[in-house]
Length: 113
Image 1 (cartoon, rainbow, N blue to C red):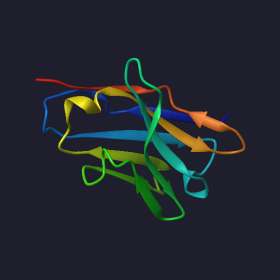
Image 2 (image 1 turned 60 degrees about the horizontal axis):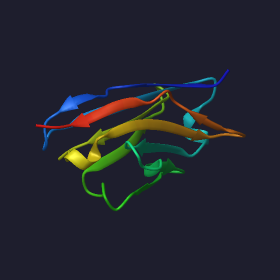
Image 3 (image 1 turned 90 degrees about the vertical axis):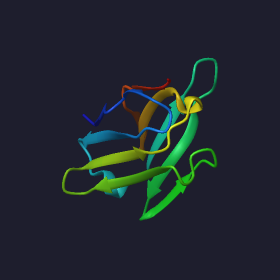
Image 4 (image 1 turned 135 degrees about the vertical axis):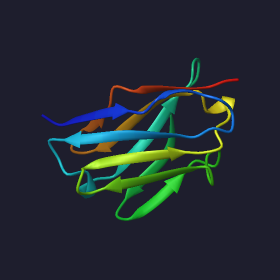
């Protein structure tokens, strides 16, 4: 079966950095559009970053601070998060757009002093 396994979440101070990993299995991620979403308490899930066909796109709120990338050899997608703000606090989910959407289990990112 296809699966996404996320890791790298945690507690960081404002201005800190964190790198999230999304390891894909059962499919080759480079053949599909890969995305990172996040959901804060009481809010809808929102698209943060997207990678497909060598092109990246970002939400305005994270542009210039976050970077999505992929390692073909490891079949893993990353989200590098720099200059973190308290409003970045959310559960972050990896998503693959296959014949059906595939979601990771989510990893908690908390930005607090």
